[in-house]
Image 1 (cartoon, rainbow, N blue to C red):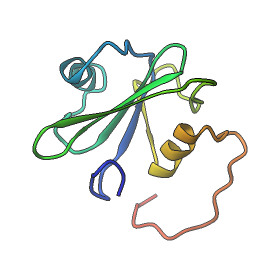
Image 2: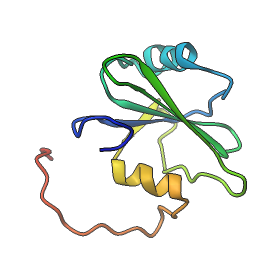
Image 3: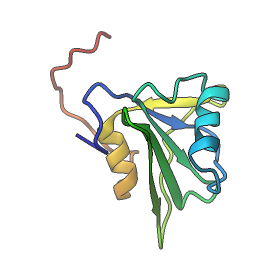
Image 4: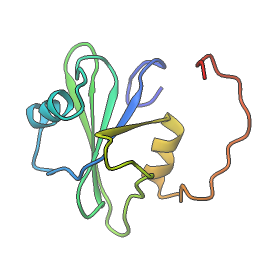
Length: 119
């Protein structure tokens, strides 16, 4: 489990840069108005600033909102390819961990695994 959420949670990376002065209300507003999603769904919403050295992760945990915040002292977070028309990109928990740990997404190869998700 990551960030105290269930295994059913989906991870959405916001495609635009985010003003990191935003708190619970501002980030929830982005989720509703820009992503067209419900911030109370239990899904995880990831926001990165313009210089890509700050990230905020917003999640509703059934009793309230939680924000996880990380600032890099050196380097940047890598953004996966997102179409300009997309407001967000759904990513896996594994890809989020790679982004947070600074591992390049370009050459990652995943081995075949069972999944209940329908293709």
